[in-house]
Image (cartoon, rainbow, N blue to C red; front, side, top):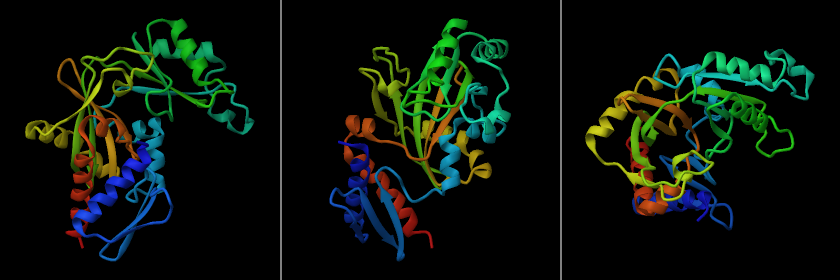
Amino acid sequence: MQNSLLNTRCVQMACMNLGIPYKSYDDNQNFIEIRIHNKPYFFVNFSTPFNGEGISFVCKDKYFTYKLLQHVIRMPRTLSFFDPEYPNDAYKQYVKEKDNPEIVDSIVENFSFPIIVKMNQGSMGRNVFVCNTKSEILQAVETIYKKDSTLYDYIALAQEHISIQKEYRVIIFKREIMLIYEKDFSRAIISDNISPLHQENSKAVLIEDIAIRTTLQNFIEPIFDSFDIQFAGLDIIVDNRGQLYLLEINSKPGFSYFVRDNGEQRLMHMYEDIFTKLINTK
């Protein structure tokens, strides 16, 4: 099932269970309006009505997220590099390195191998590379800056490599955790895409352990005084020493893998919890 339809379908089921008025504006049920305290909330495809445009843009731009939160919560150290051959001269002020080899030298000077190199505004693990040599970094940068690619990004990121023991997706609403699942890659068949759930035999495992929930809630709490995000999926990793790191924040989290492994009911219950929270807030 498409992620967009999956999302609005579970929204509708939650509304029916709670007796919340809703209606669809399209034949495919991808544009849903619900009303709570006579206030309209619009769910369009996989977009929710809870975050403003500025908040969503910061989440989409991984380097902006890092610059905003790097001193608030533990994150992998990250540097950004603007495409030296960006076609619009008006943006030349952002270019610091004269060419891709100079970018490679700068990355090697600032990080130890292995090094993560990835596109700034990517998703679903696309154009994320684990590099062990200068030639691999150069290839990664050239791939990210490939102008005729649909994945072209004018900003490449270099990031310190963290040895990951576990990775969680944490769904929050109004500062509170609504849903946690582990991206279990213990039996995964490693592929070019290093994102756990995009590897064969990986699994989204629902986490209901209170101790884990409390640990993650305490870890993310400092975010909200700096970043007024209302609804999001936070990717959090645990390294081999047990330290937590925030990787990124997704203001439009997808649930297709979660539903594949856990069914629709748990996602529907998450929306019931969110709507109940709204009903009880006046």
